[in-house]
Image (cartoon, rainbow, N blue to C red; front, top):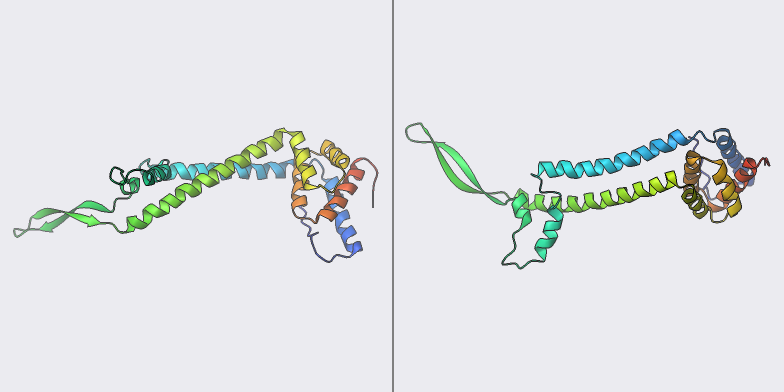
Length: 220
């Protein structure tokens, strides 16, 4: 992929025109060849969602299938009567537990002794996993919404056109329509990413010149 920095605060006119022409020449010569790049990016978004959901279920298995409801139980626990509530954090991360010690008796045989062991590290662990529960849920929701957005952009040409119009608000809508009709989803994706990293005025000129190129009216 061609990477250009067109957001420089001080760019002389000749230099700006040269960079813009370079991008236009690249885009025109590679039009309809960006789908593979775009779908690789989309596949990474799917992997991001799968990784997040997978982390939740692996963590659930690690904690004895208590993690998926851990955060919600902690929230419900704080609203119950203090005299009747059961701490879910103490259930998953007990702070006091029974321990068995084996010692040698006077005759050399092993004698087991039962006692109580304090696990102070679980005081920290229970707070860490509450944070992780909320973090995973938030990331999973955001990733899921991003996937829904991506599906809409893949199967909705009108959605892509409206998004491109929103990104290039200074451009003529008719030019956006021309570009949307001529370009495939990979081309749209590259243009949309360019709009995020370019000055709006330069991006307007790029859209204008690209529309003229696609209409057959070449510009230098």
